[in-house]
Image 1: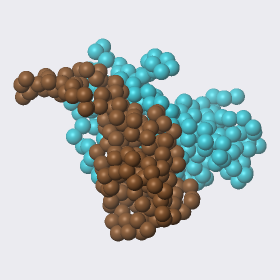
Image 2: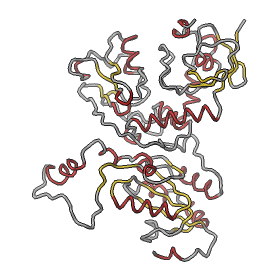
Image 3: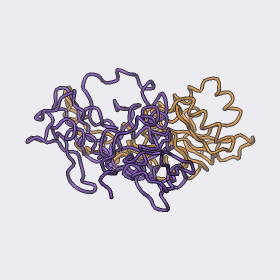
Image 4: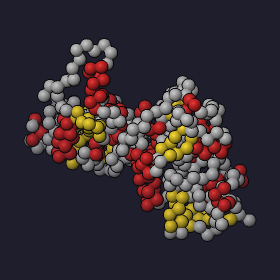
Length: 250
Length: 187
């Protein structure tokens, strides 16, 4: 017997251990998300997947699916919150899309398109974040970092290298490289590492392959992220990847 | 004040455009609407714009501003637009985010000027320009919304002709402009 919860008034089936995001994606229902990645333990930090559940707000990526949940996601209120979150991310970093190699493949940008973000709205912070071009094959452009920790998680959990970490708090929080010099050239990162694949924005880039696919023909130029995320998501019974944080909850 | 002070004799919407710290690429994209310019000209007449060479903006329905704010003159022009235009539109990455000129924001202005005019290789007897006619650069480059209230934004570098056309036709028809997938673009 399958269990169900309600997402915007419609029943969504789930299997034990699935989070609300996982069950929704498996059922062909998109909940906007940014720091969530199907292969990693949910982080719950970007808050873009915020939904209203039985009257309270919660991040859908860390919320275990349960019978009786009434989840509201596509509402003016919740999409308005997501809109503001994306605006704040744009205002806090230096996101200059016209010169970014990740443009068109960038999840932050694609979310902006989907949520109709026409301006960052807030006063731009214009932080000073020098790039690290020391590695012969890899460029780090910290200007675009949104602190999702996906590279941190991939490097430690999959690659077993712990090349990246976050340091500082609040506005001073930033991505650091785990080497004595603090530079990427003195780490054992390799082009084949998982950490090279997971950045949702344009921080971790391979050198000498830039603009191989022209702007306008890239992933989210072809279809919006809401459609792309569903096309990528495992369907129904295939979606069994356990959600560790859910398993650990009481 | 040009001929803008006399009331318009038609029921066409009056539109002013300008480029501040921009490259005129957004204006080129506006011209890229090609033959739709004829339809547009049945609906609007231009006040201050590179197309008319009117020097100051008079009372207008719509003001379209390209480019960010990098010097004192930009601030004056933007305020003149805001004062005269019922609806103010920021067009392009520079007007909305500061864009390319804002890439200097993490550098010290004095060292920028020094590098460009004094220490750059090949410069002999260089001089930092100091003519009183030249507007003074601001310490930082700002997007428009940090200086005045902006009513609408058309992102893109530049926005496509189709995006500009979609926006303008919606606005002139009295609809809230909305750019869907394929028309909204930050690059």
